[in-house]
Image (cartoon, rainbow, N blue to C red; front, top):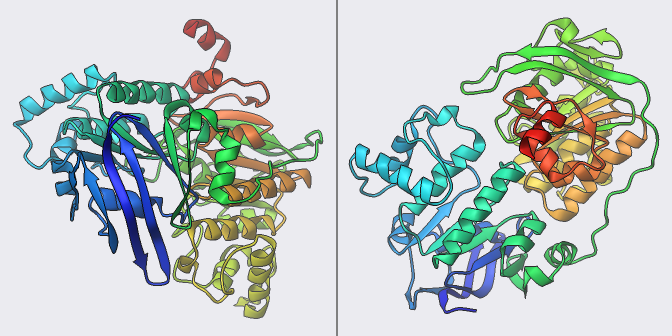
Length: 508
């Protein structure tokens, strides 16, 4: 390896009841792409926040370019050449690109000069960006470019990237990788966090693996399989989800020309969405964030009403019906935002069980909720889905993200839905929990339910889907059999190619 740029020695950080990082030591070389891997709760976030000056360690030390490095705030990290692109963008939709970039700079130059620098840097690194465009009108991939360009204008020595491809199409991933390789060739070091292990193998030279706050392994991803790295992360053997092969049954859910405006500012309107889903089928719907996924779930769940005929359940128009009425008929949904939308954070698990299962599990009578039955149902979900919690009396917010996700998905599955729609079922969930959730969805389909999985994780969709469709700007492509689809074809669909044969011919 080349000379060391950043060296971590014995970093330890504890919070009440948990040690987030314990004696973490490793080096990042100059011009190296270094992966940081680990399950949720492994300590990755705390560690990169320490490097970026957002967290101060209890003990241990860092050196950067051979000199002591102890940032107490991000501005000090940036002054030393450390930049970070966060997983969740920190941009103002109502401002343009140049304004957003200026807000992230200590001493921004005059606007005209800054706009020219944005154009120059974006062209030099293959990330075309118009500084005068309003951020609210940008795609997720273009928003990420804003964050990256903001970092590159600082001429960083170390660039930290947290899940950078979670909102990108395969083609946009290739563009990003081209940029990162160019940066590496110029001597910039990159600390890369991702759960997409095949990307790690394609891009990174070294991987440091954390488990429960400790470094448990270091490997060369180019010589280590994705499965081996996943098993190092979880400390056990992973089981690939399996399903019983069975032909799909009759159509149970049909969308007929579903069109609806978004209820949110800068949201995406649904435009003439049509599809059929059959009993026993898993339909995967992919799409870069912000292309209508949230609106589709709202329209299916009943939170957003449409014309009656636009949503049909077992041949019955339900587009005008509210969520409880649809649940009674067997159409259930689990939204992406688990804390605040799928669950009430300050309510107990018992209360959260009653919120959505009241109708189908008969948890109320004559308008009064049976707390005994509700508690029993919450306990059933906790047991069947291995939710790690002291008990059903605990508040939803007390659970880790992965455990709350298992509770939310389990709460819906155990109601025996005829149709289940889930958005991002394994978002932010570790490998073992993700595998169990995927298996539960496959088991539900095997029992005859129609399952719609909306996800940005293409590997997940290809693993569990019978058919695949893509959302782009509120328009849904025609579903195609998932088996045999190439990443090139999927990328074209995600980019809005609705006539695949014509699009593939044009691309060729």
